Structure formats: C-alpha cells, structure tokens
Image (cartoon, rainbow, N blue to C red):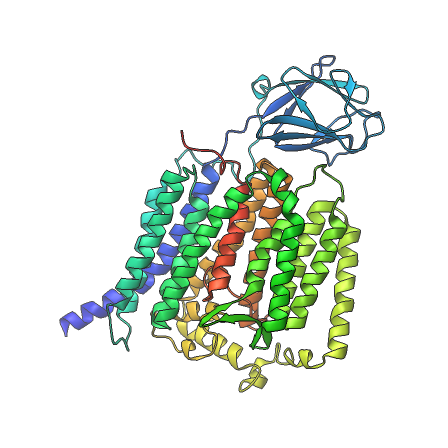
Length: 557
C-alpha cells in the first residue's frame, strides 16, 4: 500500500514536471538565440570626404537611393529613389546600378555591370561621392536589434547542456510511457528512447565537430519538437514511432545538404528552372498515380512505403520563390513565379488537397510582397484566389460539403464533426497536465497522431505542453524576422521569413482545424505529427532559416 502511494505520487509529479521542463527548454533555446550574435558593428563605412558624413553599411545587400525605404539613404535630389545596390559576396564587395538616371561611378568611371569595390575606392551617386572604408572607421554607437538586445550579461547556455536538457525531457517521456496502463512490454519505450538519443547526439556531434557550426540553438529546438513527436507515438503505433525516427534522420541529412547547397545563392539561382520542372513533375505524379486518402489524392505508394510529394515540393517552392534578385527592389522573375504558383495550386486543387493549396497560396502572398513590396500584386492575387475558389465550388459542389460542419461540429457529432468533437472533449479531459502518455482515448480516433495531434498532446501531456510546443514553432517567425537584417543575401532573408511563415500557417491550420476554429484541412503539426514526408519537409524548411543566420557559414576557430 505504501509503495503504491509512492508510485502514484511519482507519476503525478512527473506529469507536473514535464510542462514546466518544456517551458524551460523553449525559453533556453530562444534566450541562447538572442545572446549569441555578431557584434553590432558596420561591415564597411561610406565616408563623404566633403561633408565628413559617415554612413554605416550593416547588411550584405544594401539598396542605395533617395527613397526613405533604402538601406542607405542619400539626401541628394540628383540621386534616384532606387539608385544602386552594394553587395557583399564571398569574393569581396560589389556595386550594381539599378537603372538610375544619372548612373553610378567607381573612381570616376561609369559602371555598366556589377563592379568589384576595394577599400578606398570612391563611389559616385548623383552629385555625391563616398569613400569605401573599413567598418572600424565608424565610431558612433549602433543600436542593437530589438530581438538581440541583451537583458543581462549572462552567457548563453552551452549547446551540450541544452542537448542534455532535451535528452532528459525525452527520457521523462519514456518513463511516463513505461507506466502505460495497458502496456504488454513496459520496457519498449526504453529501446525507442535509446535510438532517439543516438540520432540526436550523432546529429549534434556532426554539426558541432565535423561541420563546425558556431551555433546550435535552432537545431536544438527542432530536436526537442521532433523527439517529442517520436516519443508520443510509442504508445500509439510503435512501428510508426521508428518510421518517424528514421524519417527525422533523413530530414536532418536533408537539412545539412540544403545548407551546403544554397551556400552560394548566385550559383544555385541558375537551377531555378530545373527545380520548377522537378516540383511540377512531383505534383503531376500525385495527380496521375496518387491514392486518395482523407479525400485528397496526394499519396504515392511504392510497395509498403508511402510518400507525400507535396511536402517535398514545399521546400522547392521556397527555394524558387526566394531566388535572389541580382538587383534589389526590382520585379525580375516575379511573373515567372506567379505562373509557377498558379500551376502548383491548381495541381493541388485537382488532387483535392485544399489545405496544402492554402498553405502554398499564403506563402505565395508573403514571397510576392517581400520581393516586390507592391500591395497591388497582393490585392490582385487575393482577388484571383477568391475567383478560383468560386469556380471550384460552382463546378465541384461536393467540396462545400466538407465544410458544412464547420462551427457546428456538435450538430454533426456522428459524421462530419466526429473528429473535432472528440478533440474538444479530450482536450478538456486532459486538463493542465494530461492523463499520461498512452492513457488517452483520442488515439482511438482516426488521424489522432497526425491531423489531430494537438488534441492528442493536450490529452496525454496537458494543454500547457501543447501550447508550449505550438509557441516553439510560432516563435520561429520572430527569430527569422530578426536575423534577416544581418543575412548574407536577399535570398536568405526572403527564404527564412517565408519558410518560417509556411510552418506557422501550417501550424495554425492544424490547431484551429482540430479545434473547429477553422475548417479541418488535414495538414500536419510541424515536427510533431506522424508522417515521414512531413517531418522531412519540416527539416528542409528549417534549413532556410538556419542559412539566413550569417553565423551559419562561419566556422569555429
């Protein structure tokens, strides 16, 4: 009796510990992201020899012009609103004219194409001249970015300590799963945990000591989310947990490959058209050979292996949409991207995968605005989307039937609203701390481990953990936005923000669809939901956020 009471207390304590520990881990990840940054000093300085004015150059790509939206504003009526662009590349600094009226000059000679700059060269724009100087010659204090501003002088947590915290959290999940009421093999979670820990620490070793990355906070956060999703499956379908772990390992490899692949955006941009062909080919394969699951023909089966090509196309879509502009503040290749987006969304609509189609469209809006800065483009795109949706509903009225239970799920509790009703019920039953891994009832509902995983986490681990995991994904947007001001290229800035935005849109559709705030669209919870293609795609998207951090391509000394 005594030992039984001690056991029960221990189980309850573990359920309370997990939410607190999850909050601490997420906080430590983002605290480390804020503190590990490059000093706020200019890369180079532009000095006006006549007035003594010193202009700090903070970015790898800088628009120069009279417009207040330019990175470097020159208050000279003879300077065009968008005059030229100052670029840093691996082989030095370059300057490119963007069709200015008066032209751009280097050492008194008008430039016609991208021209390399050397220290002490003189740049002429309009009636103004600037000497190209080293960053150390700017002595005024620069304000830190709002995100990176230090609250205190505490050093960031060591990467290996952060990894230990994450491993310990997953071990606690393992222990909780071992106490599953219906467990036939109570020790099976230990085997899965050992495999998970091996993959996570192998990835950490490769990143820190082979690739010699100087920062690991972003990967740590992704490992925390990925491992939580894997351990959650151990008492659902154990085989699925191992499949998810293998897919996660493949995603980590893809993560490293993409970072290496896009190291030089000037070169990879040439592959934009072949990548378009690959993306359209993958979607066409789904249209022709896809097996209908959940109303959408987006699964390809090769023997016992199932692949969802649209998840991989997300990565290609970000790459194509973010292809760096040789000249900033132009609309070069925008029409090409619009046509490509229409084809992708159209093929997804033919498959019946309207959730993914909506994700692609929202990502398109974000990319289009970041590339053009033109609200007219966005308005026209939204109008076209509304028109297209009207046409679909006109000729395919059955599509509307999928949404007739929206906001009325309790009226359709036995048919269209069955899943959401159970999600809402079991979220309430899970309370703050959950009923324990494996002890929930939502796992008996179809797609509980994928489309409805937010409800599963809420029931078995508590609403605190579920919200913490959601915030961890959502805060990726905050981080992506913060690092883009110091990224090495416009390509990295756009791709990071859009990749993070795509993940958050997907997150919102998953959570709000499962809880009847939005129609249920069948998209996954990033990093958490079961699905090999989904987890691989998430790690691929994360690579764009990682690449935008200028420290990524630095090596430890």
